[in-house]
Amino acid sequence: MNILMPIGDGTEVLDTFYAYYRLPEDGYKVVVAGLEKRLYHTVLHEIPPNPDVPWDITQERPGYHLKTSAAFCDLDAGGFEGAFISGGRAPEYLRYDENLLGLIRGIVERGLPVACLCHGIEILSAAGVIQGKRVTTVPKCALDAEQGGATYVDEDWVEDDWLVTGRGYAENTVVLKSFIQKLKERRA
Image (cartoon, rainbow, N blue to C red; front, side, top):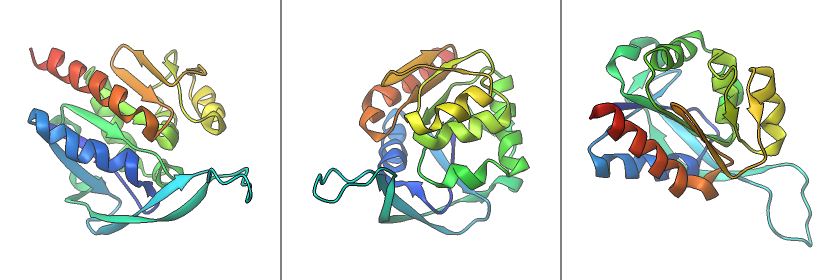
């Protein structure tokens, strides 16, 4: 009952840790994987809400650290029941790793559930697995979704068959609830 969780430096802390601790409550083992098996830096990835110091782009501040248990190149898609892809800046460079893209394709080809938040859509788009799907993400990643053949919708969260997408960490609860339900249905 393994769930793939790809991370890298710049992975969004709330996107990642909520699922990391929530999924085991339902009996799933979260396999945290990266380009290498090592310790990674997470970040708080948000536009600060202080109107006195406006930002029109996302600011990053240091978060917690998380160690991977495996490198993408050492894994096989057949060992997973689904994938949870968090956001932050990490997907921007992880999407170039063919080992990760192969893992995602292998999971999707088996019709297994995938949950994705925020910038994680960049990985799904690069893997070529969202053609014809309705998805959501942060508005600045709408183009990434559309370039992958998906239809971007301006909603907090969206379900489309095996796929659950959310804008970001504010949608953690509803995205994880839907994802876990899809995992349980698949197992039944």
